[in-house]
Image (cartoon, rainbow, N blue to C red; front, side):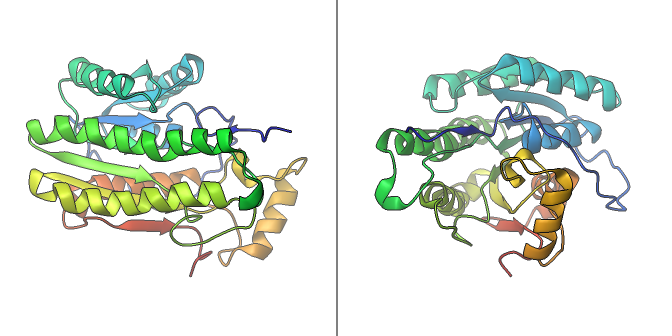
Length: 278
């Protein structure tokens, strides 16, 4: 049986709000932000967080409908929210080049890019990995991140610099899990690629970092047939923090890394996982 692909672009996402006790600012007023995989889940939450802090946001993904829902949410919830949906396949260099060009043409530039597009596939032991599923996984998670950075960096270094945040995973450079070797390999590679890109391009004025979330309040944290109460009880026992992370918590970390406050933060991979890898 061919393993099922879990697409992180378009998963429906019940959201839990965590009160961070943070006063909303306007750090990104006048800035232009691109978020790939922006149709739901972590990507949607990040896009909305940037819009709430004043940014114009382009959300990208392979399917138009979930992106449109993100745009409508931004327009409804962010004061003077500006957003546009752009369909693009991050595994295709021409798509990513057009995505960056259209974002800059729509809003007058590109200041921040968040490369969040990803999938989980090729489940099972390494010795049993389906080669086609492996190729798809590498194409989206790793090559997609590379192509996104390549075209984002090209624009930013021609236009005064910018900040890039890649969404990796604590299942990568920091932690392994039986049955997810292929996914873990791609995310470890994303973390390593982020660090090297940061060294390559900081003198170009492009500051690059990553976040590595652990279990967050998305469909990916559920086992088949599990209720929210079941999931919370299981995660309460497994995680040192006693719960899954809130989408506003991962969004806050991404906004920090993209902000002027993190101006001396270069090549980091910030773990947001409730102590799972401590």
